[in-house]
Length: 469
Ligand SMILES: [Zn+2]
Image 1 (tube, rainbow, N blue to C red):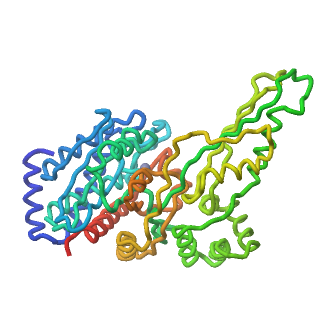
Image 2: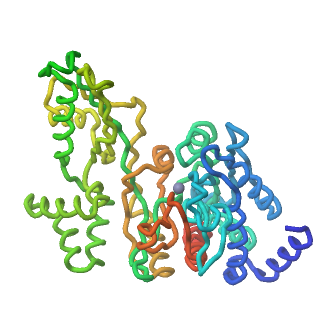
Image 3: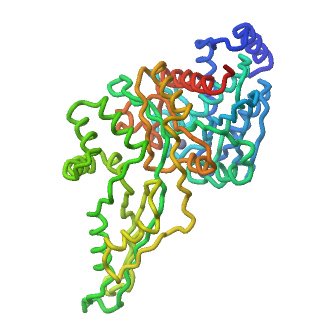
């Protein structure tokens, strides 16, 4: 942007927003939102290697021009994190709004519109990061700009964090910020990725807010036997023992257990679903074991993500053993991807796995010693959740479902510091994922109209939580 244009924009903003607390001029906001969204989408922050400093450079220049104080934190200069803060009167503790600046890598040959072109076509914006996570990044940055320009009086600081390394290298991003610079981002509440609004046939059905996530805890099985000549089968063959153990694990479905988030999720989902599916969601909550088991079977076959939300899940994902056809191997190994319910006792769970394996020739052990902590869920009776529900109703006319992610997000690190974090996101079409337009797909896109609606949502939520009353 040229200096003259900046000045013109500034004067226009001053004229548009004469008093503090005024409502943004949304048509002007939309034009600017698109400009920043496309600008950050066009910066190639594929991780690896990341190069998130490209986004940080852009943000630094923008926030400096707006007069919003900011700081850059980096353990690796190319992979910096950006923190900006708008001061409140200190009556309440800060609110942190987060977006990650890195994106997953792309296979250029598979993209109709180049992955870093931010092409606008047919009402969509196409590009890597459009829904993961430059949407949250853009909405948060727009909220910061508007709060500043409208001179909104705040009861709490609003902190904006653009973090690097979310896609598998959290050591330079959230891990670094939490362990080395926590005071810069410390807050009572945070908003980050992990939720969204579901549209079916173009119609908004419900919003989800992520309030909890499962804890990854890998387990390894090691079968040991006697090595020998392949022409003489042995009873101790490690592959045979391992195959039996894995088959028993595969048949096993650990105990169903609900927490506040998942119980509320299934109840609310039942309330807005067609009768046949609604019955399944209600049945799975039943205290009658037979009723529950039938619903559980249906979910496992038809909605596996929902099945995983019911329990600590176990998926055997790596099987190794043997190296030539005429040698009986003395060892076979299997890695289980275990996603634990947050209240799971790891030691007791390991004992359960041993009982299911039920073979002294097979050792059962955790694969990584330093597993993530298991923070408590964000509360549903908290001020942010109520505000998210309220704004979900006013902006989307949709009910809000609290959700537990089966995968992990950077909110785990923040929650473990005592912050209550809520995952949000724009509306996307449920049909878009299977068509290959979702996060991490070989095409990624977001409806322009939904980007703009999400900016309004973000603004409403943040002002409701932070504006002086
Ligand atoms: Zn993401």
